Length: 256
Image (cartoon, rainbow, N blue to C red; front, side):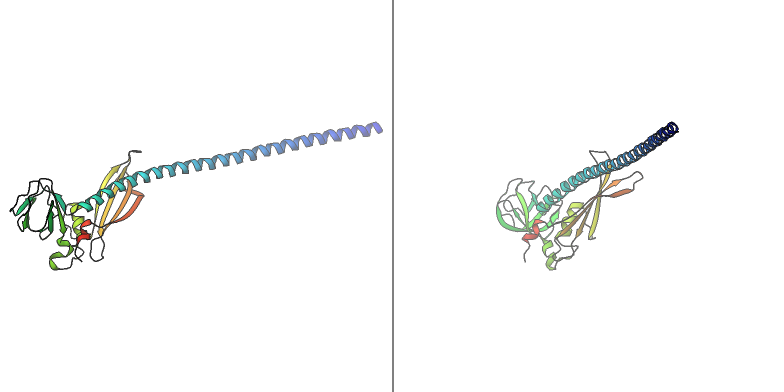
Protein backbone atom coordinates (compact mmCIF):
# COMPACT_ATOMS: atom_id res chain seq x y z
CA UNK A 1 0.00 0.00 0.00
CA UNK A 2 2.75 2.41 0.96
CA UNK A 3 4.57 1.67 -2.27
CA UNK A 4 1.43 2.33 -4.26
CA UNK A 5 0.89 5.68 -2.53
CA UNK A 6 4.45 6.73 -3.26
CA UNK A 7 3.97 5.77 -6.89
CA UNK A 8 0.81 7.91 -7.12
CA UNK A 9 2.58 10.78 -5.40
CA UNK A 10 5.47 10.64 -7.89
CA UNK A 11 2.96 10.47 -10.73
CA UNK A 12 1.18 13.60 -9.46
CA UNK A 13 4.52 15.42 -9.18
CA UNK A 14 5.37 14.51 -12.78
CA UNK A 15 1.92 15.73 -13.90
CA UNK A 16 2.41 19.00 -12.02
CA UNK A 17 5.87 19.44 -13.51
CA UNK A 18 4.53 18.87 -17.02
CA UNK A 19 1.65 21.30 -16.39
CA UNK A 20 4.07 23.91 -14.97
CA UNK A 21 6.37 23.45 -17.95
CA UNK A 22 3.49 23.93 -20.38
CA UNK A 23 2.32 27.00 -18.43
CA UNK A 24 5.82 28.52 -18.55
CA UNK A 25 6.02 27.80 -22.26
CA UNK A 26 2.67 29.56 -22.71
CA UNK A 27 3.87 32.59 -20.75
CA UNK A 28 7.09 32.67 -22.78
CA UNK A 29 5.11 32.67 -26.02
CA UNK A 30 2.91 35.54 -24.80
CA UNK A 31 6.00 37.50 -23.75
CA UNK A 32 7.51 36.99 -27.20
CA UNK A 33 4.30 38.15 -28.89
CA UNK A 34 4.04 41.19 -26.61
CA UNK A 35 7.69 41.99 -27.27
CA UNK A 36 7.14 41.73 -31.02
CA UNK A 37 4.08 43.99 -30.80
CA UNK A 38 6.03 46.58 -28.81
CA UNK A 39 8.94 46.43 -31.25
CA UNK A 40 6.58 46.76 -34.23
CA UNK A 41 4.89 49.73 -32.58
CA UNK A 42 8.27 51.30 -31.81
CA UNK A 43 9.48 50.81 -35.39
CA UNK A 44 6.22 52.28 -36.75
CA UNK A 45 6.50 55.36 -34.52
CA UNK A 46 10.18 55.74 -35.39
CA UNK A 47 9.36 55.61 -39.10
CA UNK A 48 6.67 58.24 -38.62
CA UNK A 49 9.19 60.47 -36.86
CA UNK A 50 11.71 59.92 -39.66
CA UNK A 51 9.13 60.84 -42.31
CA UNK A 52 8.04 63.88 -40.30
CA UNK A 53 11.66 64.90 -39.77
CA UNK A 54 12.37 64.59 -43.51
CA UNK A 55 9.28 66.69 -44.27
CA UNK A 56 10.38 69.37 -41.80
CA UNK A 57 13.88 69.38 -43.29
CA UNK A 58 12.48 69.79 -46.82
CA UNK A 59 10.16 72.57 -45.66
CA UNK A 60 13.03 74.28 -43.87
CA UNK A 61 15.19 74.14 -47.01
CA UNK A 62 12.33 75.52 -49.14
CA UNK A 63 11.74 78.32 -46.64
CA UNK A 64 15.44 79.24 -46.51
CA UNK A 65 15.65 79.37 -50.31
CA UNK A 66 12.43 81.40 -50.58
CA UNK A 67 13.72 83.87 -47.99
CA UNK A 68 16.92 84.26 -50.02
CA UNK A 69 14.88 85.18 -53.10
CA UNK A 70 12.82 87.65 -51.08
CA UNK A 71 15.88 89.22 -49.45
CA UNK A 72 17.60 89.70 -52.80
CA UNK A 73 14.54 91.37 -54.32
CA UNK A 74 13.97 93.56 -51.27
CA UNK A 75 17.57 94.74 -51.29
CA UNK A 76 17.19 95.67 -54.95
CA UNK A 77 14.05 97.68 -54.14
CA UNK A 78 15.86 99.48 -51.32
CA UNK A 79 18.65 100.37 -53.74
CA UNK A 80 16.11 101.69 -56.23
CA UNK A 81 14.37 103.70 -53.50
CA UNK A 82 17.69 105.36 -52.66
CA UNK A 83 18.30 106.23 -56.32
CA UNK A 84 14.72 107.23 -57.16
CA UNK A 85 14.70 110.68 -58.80
CA UNK A 86 18.43 110.58 -59.53
CA UNK A 87 20.65 109.69 -62.50
CA UNK A 88 23.87 110.82 -64.20
CA UNK A 89 24.82 112.99 -67.17
CA UNK A 90 25.29 111.16 -70.44
CA UNK A 91 26.68 114.30 -72.11
CA UNK A 92 28.73 116.97 -70.31
CA UNK A 93 26.66 119.99 -69.24
CA UNK A 94 27.93 123.30 -70.58
CA UNK A 95 27.56 126.80 -69.21
CA UNK A 96 24.56 128.79 -70.54
CA UNK A 97 22.86 125.64 -71.85
CA UNK A 98 19.23 125.15 -70.90
CA UNK A 99 19.14 121.39 -71.40
CA UNK A 100 20.98 118.34 -70.10
CA UNK A 101 21.14 114.77 -71.41
CA UNK A 102 20.94 111.85 -68.94
CA UNK A 103 21.50 108.12 -69.27
CA UNK A 104 17.84 107.83 -68.20
CA UNK A 105 15.24 110.46 -67.39
CA UNK A 106 12.56 107.90 -66.50
CA UNK A 107 12.06 108.95 -62.89
CA UNK A 108 12.05 112.70 -63.43
CA UNK A 109 8.95 114.84 -63.98
CA UNK A 110 8.20 118.37 -65.06
CA UNK A 111 8.55 120.81 -62.13
CA UNK A 112 10.99 118.57 -60.24
CA UNK A 113 13.85 120.63 -58.80
CA UNK A 114 17.33 119.20 -59.46
CA UNK A 115 21.00 119.84 -58.78
CA UNK A 116 23.80 118.92 -61.20
CA UNK A 117 27.18 117.63 -60.00
CA UNK A 118 29.00 120.11 -57.77
CA UNK A 119 26.82 123.00 -58.99
CA UNK A 120 24.88 124.38 -56.02
CA UNK A 121 22.25 125.99 -58.23
CA UNK A 122 18.78 124.45 -57.98
CA UNK A 123 17.23 124.00 -61.43
CA UNK A 124 13.57 123.39 -62.29
CA UNK A 125 12.62 120.97 -65.05
CA UNK A 126 10.30 122.65 -67.55
CA UNK A 127 10.12 119.87 -70.17
CA UNK A 128 11.26 116.30 -70.77
CA UNK A 129 11.94 114.77 -74.19
CA UNK A 130 13.30 111.23 -74.09
CA UNK A 131 16.32 111.43 -71.79
CA UNK A 132 16.81 115.17 -72.22
CA UNK A 133 15.67 117.63 -69.57
CA UNK A 134 14.95 121.27 -70.30
CA UNK A 135 15.79 123.28 -67.20
CA UNK A 136 15.67 126.83 -65.87
CA UNK A 137 17.67 128.88 -65.22
CA UNK A 138 20.45 128.19 -67.74
CA UNK A 139 23.42 126.19 -66.46
CA UNK A 140 25.88 128.30 -64.50
CA UNK A 141 28.61 125.70 -63.81
CA UNK A 142 29.92 123.14 -66.31
CA UNK A 143 29.65 119.49 -65.26
CA UNK A 144 31.40 116.42 -66.73
CA UNK A 145 29.89 113.17 -68.01
CA UNK A 146 28.60 110.92 -65.20
CA UNK A 147 28.06 113.89 -62.89
CA UNK A 148 25.04 113.07 -60.68
CA UNK A 149 21.72 114.75 -61.37
CA UNK A 150 19.56 114.55 -58.25
CA UNK A 151 16.11 115.87 -57.46
CA UNK A 152 16.37 118.15 -54.45
CA UNK A 153 12.59 118.26 -54.30
CA UNK A 154 10.02 116.36 -56.31
CA UNK A 155 6.79 117.66 -57.74
CA UNK A 156 5.26 114.62 -56.07
CA UNK A 157 5.97 116.15 -52.68
CA UNK A 158 3.25 118.65 -53.48
CA UNK A 159 1.69 117.88 -56.85
CA UNK A 160 1.51 121.22 -58.72
CA UNK A 161 0.60 123.22 -55.61
CA UNK A 162 -2.12 120.68 -54.78
CA UNK A 163 -1.53 118.24 -51.90
CA UNK A 164 -0.47 114.87 -53.26
CA UNK A 165 -3.12 112.17 -53.39
CA UNK A 166 -2.64 108.43 -53.01
CA UNK A 167 -2.15 108.04 -56.78
CA UNK A 168 0.06 111.11 -57.29
CA UNK A 169 2.38 110.93 -54.29
CA UNK A 170 5.95 109.71 -54.03
CA UNK A 171 5.02 106.09 -53.25
CA UNK A 172 2.94 105.96 -56.44
CA UNK A 173 5.78 107.40 -58.51
CA UNK A 174 8.26 104.96 -57.00
CA UNK A 175 5.95 102.01 -57.68
CA UNK A 176 5.44 103.16 -61.28
CA UNK A 177 9.21 103.39 -61.78
CA UNK A 178 9.58 99.77 -60.60
CA UNK A 179 6.86 98.26 -62.78
CA UNK A 180 7.67 100.56 -65.70
CA UNK A 181 4.12 101.77 -66.13
CA UNK A 182 2.00 104.68 -64.89
CA UNK A 183 -0.61 102.82 -62.87
CA UNK A 184 -3.71 104.42 -61.39
CA UNK A 185 -4.43 101.59 -58.94
CA UNK A 186 -3.17 101.55 -55.37
CA UNK A 187 -2.00 97.92 -55.41
CA UNK A 188 -0.40 95.75 -58.08
CA UNK A 189 1.11 92.26 -58.31
CA UNK A 190 4.18 91.08 -60.17
CA UNK A 191 4.57 87.32 -60.59
CA UNK A 192 7.76 85.55 -61.63
CA UNK A 193 8.73 81.87 -61.64
CA UNK A 194 11.65 80.67 -59.54
CA UNK A 195 13.33 77.29 -59.83
CA UNK A 196 14.76 75.68 -56.71
CA UNK A 197 18.46 74.90 -56.89
CA UNK A 198 17.88 72.12 -54.34
CA UNK A 199 14.88 70.25 -55.77
CA UNK A 200 14.44 71.76 -59.25
CA UNK A 201 10.81 72.46 -58.32
CA UNK A 202 9.02 75.53 -59.68
CA UNK A 203 7.74 78.27 -57.40
CA UNK A 204 5.58 81.34 -57.97
CA UNK A 205 7.32 84.43 -56.62
CA UNK A 206 4.67 87.11 -56.10
CA UNK A 207 5.53 90.67 -55.11
CA UNK A 208 2.64 92.99 -54.30
CA UNK A 209 3.33 96.71 -54.02
CA UNK A 210 0.66 98.81 -52.35
CA UNK A 211 0.55 102.48 -51.43
CA UNK A 212 -0.16 103.16 -47.79
CA UNK A 213 -3.29 105.29 -47.49
CA UNK A 214 -1.59 107.67 -45.10
CA UNK A 215 -0.68 111.30 -45.83
CA UNK A 216 1.78 112.25 -47.36
CA UNK A 217 1.47 108.99 -49.38
CA UNK A 218 5.18 108.22 -49.45
CA UNK A 219 5.17 104.72 -47.94
CA UNK A 220 5.30 101.71 -50.25
CA UNK A 221 4.01 98.49 -48.68
CA UNK A 222 5.68 95.38 -50.05
CA UNK A 223 4.15 91.92 -49.63
CA UNK A 224 5.98 88.78 -50.79
CA UNK A 225 4.47 85.34 -51.26
CA UNK A 226 6.27 82.22 -52.47
CA UNK A 227 4.18 79.14 -53.37
CA UNK A 228 5.04 75.88 -55.08
CA UNK A 229 3.69 75.48 -58.62
CA UNK A 230 1.98 72.14 -59.24
CA UNK A 231 1.40 70.45 -62.58
CA UNK A 232 -1.55 72.01 -64.32
CA UNK A 233 -0.71 75.47 -63.00
CA UNK A 234 -2.24 75.18 -59.53
CA UNK A 235 -0.38 76.47 -56.48
CA UNK A 236 0.50 74.74 -53.24
CA UNK A 237 0.50 76.15 -49.75
CA UNK A 238 2.60 79.24 -49.06
CA UNK A 239 6.27 78.53 -48.44
CA UNK A 240 7.12 82.04 -47.23
CA UNK A 241 5.31 85.34 -46.65
CA UNK A 242 7.09 88.61 -45.85
CA UNK A 243 5.87 92.18 -45.35
CA UNK A 244 8.09 95.28 -45.57
CA UNK A 245 7.75 99.04 -45.98
CA UNK A 246 9.96 101.32 -48.09
CA UNK A 247 10.13 105.10 -48.10
CA UNK A 248 12.10 106.58 -51.05
CA UNK A 249 14.94 108.88 -49.98
CA UNK A 250 13.48 111.84 -51.90
CA UNK A 251 10.67 111.92 -49.32
CA UNK A 252 13.03 113.30 -46.71
CA UNK A 253 13.92 116.32 -48.84
CA UNK A 254 10.30 117.38 -49.30
CA UNK A 255 9.51 120.80 -47.87
CA UNK A 256 7.32 120.68 -44.80
